[in-house]
Length: 312
Image 1 (tube, rainbow, N blue to C red):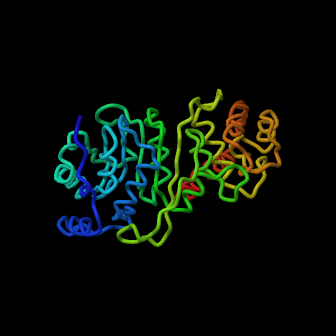
Image 2: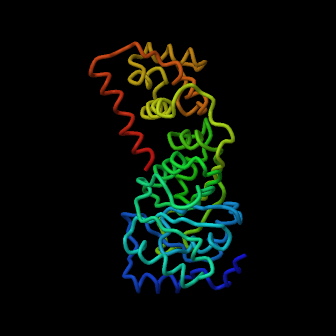
């Protein structure tokens, strides 16, 4: 059994600034870099994530290693995915210096998380991360989709994004991220994080979101791609009724109405009132024999662009 880390193994404000200075690191807005400088905060994140001694944790965007070290205090193994060249090259040395008895339990993947499709060692059981706010939703959905072994997730994101991820049908902020996250997991808000625990302090508040993977997948004959296409179309024109919003997706307003009625959904409803199960039923009932001309094909492409804006 490995001995426990020393109490001062975690990084404090002075440690973070010293590391950054030695490495010549200046946090960039482009990569959403805001480093956590408070040891109590990272330990709180680990507790809230319910990290266990047998967990294999994947962390995205470890930065200088604040949360990484706190995860290594508890988890069996931690794999960190880091895109930044300087940070990726420095992190193993930081782990070895501050937590030498756990260094063999740490692995680094130097890559863009959106391109990661495999990880070293055993399959991950948990995802815990301070996600860069500008790519938080796409990264989260990619990791959940690529690694079905992830049972529990806790991410720190911009408060507004946290609200949207955890929103339920009928909420003003319920949208594409809400439905897609709920496809994989039960999602809830798990707390707030103050601005003063970061360096540099962000101009926005932060929130924790907990996602526990569904014990059973959504029961549907439609594929994830087919269901997500309905979601994208429904929220691309959220002020319109579903009969109108799904016209491009279905081939015509009449075809959209037919799919909605067959799914037991009112054609006059709007996307923000539907559960993920209802979106799946609509996808199941799409009529594939209707081919429309180019103008409606163009309508079909619009939701993808607008949906990308909604995820930012």
